[in-house]
Length: 73
Image (cartoon, rainbow, N blue to C red; front, top):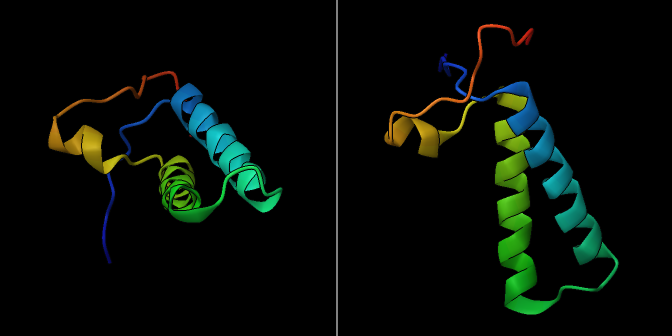
């Protein structure tokens, strides 16, 4: 089993989740099409995964964390 150490704050997670939902809705409403739409779908799934798991691979690669001790999740 892969253990992902949490490195994102609750605010960071919420913002990423909202952005993911907005990108998905823009794609499914037809506002974004083509290659750009596909790229933004992939980005939105990455944002959704990061917000659900509270783990950002980019943050880990640069040894950065937004997680506070006061975050409850």
